[in-house]
Image (cartoon, rainbow, N blue to C red):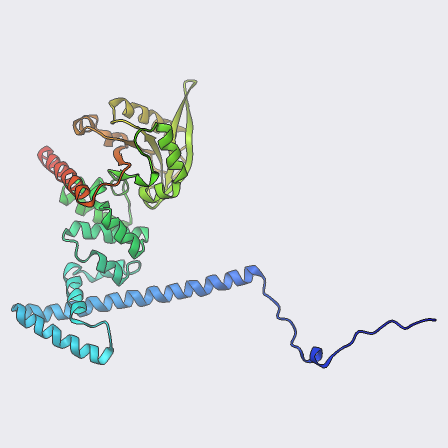
Length: 362
């Protein structure tokens, strides 16, 4: 007995059910997300920039009024009255405290062109973080480095807390030279080794305790490479460890090799457990000469070297005239010091270096 094949049953619900949505391809979604995120970011930057410039204009205008009447009590009363009226009309954000911060902002950054160049990267919260730094050179340093390296507000606050300015070679120069270098950075976006290298470097994140060998130090750095590069600063890219350098048939090994994007040059790093010794200079000069001859690419600057050591003697450093060889010697701290002691040590180092340079000047 033959049977007809059974036909599929089609229900009313099936006829009225909407067709399944077609999911767009991943590349399409990725592109659209990037467009939306980019537009949002651009709008946020534009709004932040506009608000910061507005705050500058408000601070400037109030400051002009306050300068006419040099009585402090009058200034407090007038700002209090203005704050009350603006809050009534425009809501939060126009308190007496905020208005005085805008006045201070206009006082410390009197050049609108400089403000406008900074607002492309710095928001009002960035400026708030540096407004109460007393040293104008320090304020300019953090503002320009924040612009160049695109720090978040949290990163900026961390750099200030870690006394980055005091740890740069730049801070140890006379004020006029510091001003010139910061002006060059502002006008030409040109970073120099004095802005990039620090002394000391904080390597407490490596977790090294008591006694350890150079290989332990190198291994710990490789294990914590992300943290190490963050401590080195923006722009460093890790290339190789134990780079073989063959000269006259003899193999030598460079501990770490980096490339700095903004400096456009190779950076050789040697790790030393003890204090810096004069012979370390000759070893680094050999590495730099070899890198310059065999590894330097067209358009790159001459390679430079960083010797990280547990300590150094100042007169030895001075007599060797390491800057001419493109070598920076920096100490490292594997344990975090109490903040007060760290500040004392760094301020002493800056003061001694500036005093020495002043004596050497003709």
